[in-house]
Image (tube, rainbow, N blue to C red):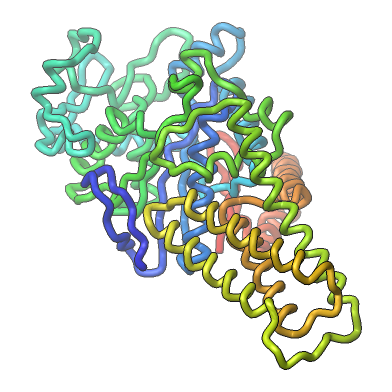
Length: 487
């Protein structure tokens, strides 16, 4: 069965055909770090982590870009309230985001570009839109003219006339049309700004994602992800400005949107104040329970968050963990024995091996049907039940015949592998090791910067070259040194 995905752009499930055979390029809308990462955010990043794990399991090479909106009205407002620079706010809460994603076992994207480090690319994109007649200047601001793009509304399925009729947007005398959106905002006193052909200012929200996606992925990349609240206006505007600039269609081949997480059937959000930080939730529930909770629901179905829901997930998840542990202990005991019983008759191990193969088939079938993790979870529980039945039937034997041993080994390995695709059964040590590795890289960058300031170029270059040999490349920018993995 081929992978099929629900594409918001066409409003139907479609067979997934990548731009480049064997490779999947993904752009995720990242965080705006102005507060602690809440459990609603976690749904998106756990889901996409699962998607990436599954695609790799199926043999695709995956490249993922996830932006960081580190300049924004909310960041600026919070900095003003606390009497600090906006950069301090964005750095503090971005660190929180990275920390809690590590705790949840979410693998880092291949590139995590910050908006403030890509102002030249954004200015170039805006300049191109002006030159092509899709955007206009107005007293230091630049707006996109939605009437100049005939396909405006194709993602959300809305007509421009209907949008104008129902618009609840504050009248801006600088705009030609109420639906026109800002590409560049002129500087206000006390706000961060950058020089541009239109005067000092900063980027609008929508343009940043277009600039970053085009820089790192180009036109026609495979998957664009985010919450369904971003369909309009954010992703609609991304499509308009990107396709207007490049003249190429589509900007992204598949738009994949997850449903929101609710509290008492009301969307969880910082603006409503009804959110729970991931850090606080992790004090009560282990990462596997949270990931199980998300995986037990289809990503396009709204999910209601609460203690009862997580406790139920914890109970179900613990059954899987207990089965996996019991199976591993049985194999470990058998492995320590010098002999394996030879029996001609077929034992229950043959059935257990068949059950493992069936679980894998059902898991793949579910995931190939629009990443239906709930089907995958059901397959895991059926396999766990088979393992438990086998262990009870054999009465804790350690002298298994070859068929039994092979069947148990296959079943335990399958349960572990398939659960790992969902991010379950992760050992805390692996997460800690990853955090330690990234901390050491940051320390080496600091040492290198000190060496460069002292003009000790040879030692500084040795650090850079050594890291490159380990698959880590450094990029020196005007705002500091960033690193990313290669290969």
